[in-house]
Length: 366
Image (cartoon, rainbow, N blue to C red; front, side):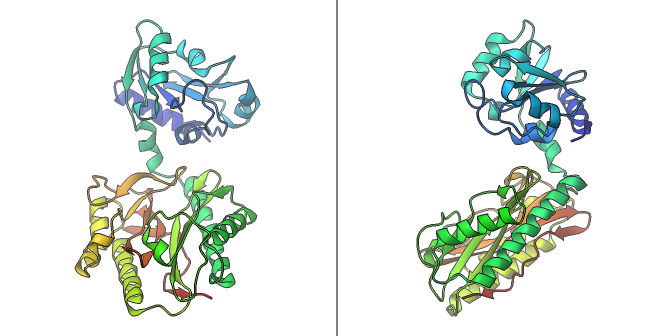
C-alpha cells in the first residue's frame, strides 16, 4: 500500500477548500468495534477494527488503540505518523486538527459528531463532505484489478464444482455452505456476501436467502456469489436448470442472456450508466417483462461488493477506464421462477474486459 493514495487524497482535500479530512468509521458510539472501513483500508492497508486517519497538505496521521499497534506497524505505510490512543480514538486525533476539517457525514453518527464538536480545538470548522475517498477508489490500479480477477476466477471454479456435483435433491442452504467452503479451500478470505441460492419460486426474489427448501428436478436455480481475495471482492450470477424446464422459462432465460449481451456491448469508458442499463432494459420491456426487472443493471465492485458507479435508469454516472462493474439483468416471474445472469467486467477505452468466464448458455445439471 503505497503513499500515493494519501497524496492523491490530500490533493482532493485541498481542491474541496479543506485543510484536513478525517477518514474512518464513526458510525458507532465510542471506539468502533466494526471492521475497518473500506476507505481506511484503501488508504492505509489497515485491516484492524479500530482506526482513524487525518489527511491534509502536511498531515498523514493514523491512530489506533493498543490492540492494533503491532498490526498497524506492519500494515500502515511509514509515510503515516502512527499514534497510539490510550482509550478513545477521537480525542487522540482531534488535538491535531486545524482549520476547515472535513468529515464523512454519511458515516458519522450523531453521537460521534457531537463528540467531535465538543473536543475539536478552537478555530476548527467541521465541514460535512462525503465521497472524497470513494471517488479515488473508483479507478482501480493493476494490483487491485489482479486481486478482483483472482476473486472472479475462484468464483468460476466454484461454479464448475457446483455443475459437476449437481443440485437436485440438495437444499439451498447445503449448496450455499458448500460453495462458501469451496471458496476458502481455493484460497479466498471468504465470500464477499452470503451466497444466494434460490430455486424455483424462490428465484423470483432477487435477494432471496438460502433456505432448507430442497431443490427439485426440472426447475431453475439462481446462484449469486463472490469471493474475497486480498481484500477485494468479486460478484457473479448464473442460473442453472435441474432438468427439462417449460417453454416460458427457457424463453425468459434466452431473453435475459441476449439482454446481458446487449448491455455488455455498451460498456466502455465514456458510456453513461443509464445507457448501459437501457441496452438491457429495452429488449426486456419489449418482450413484456419490464415490470419483472426491477433493479439496475449493475454496480461497481472493489473493496466493497457494492460501490460506485451505478448502472441504472436514473444513474448520472459516466464510466471511466479502471471502473470494475457488474452487468446483471434479470427477470423475476412472481411465484414461479427467476433468471439473472451477471458478469464482472473491467471498463477500458473502447470496451470491457470480462473477468467472469463460466459459461452463460443454460447449464442443465442433475
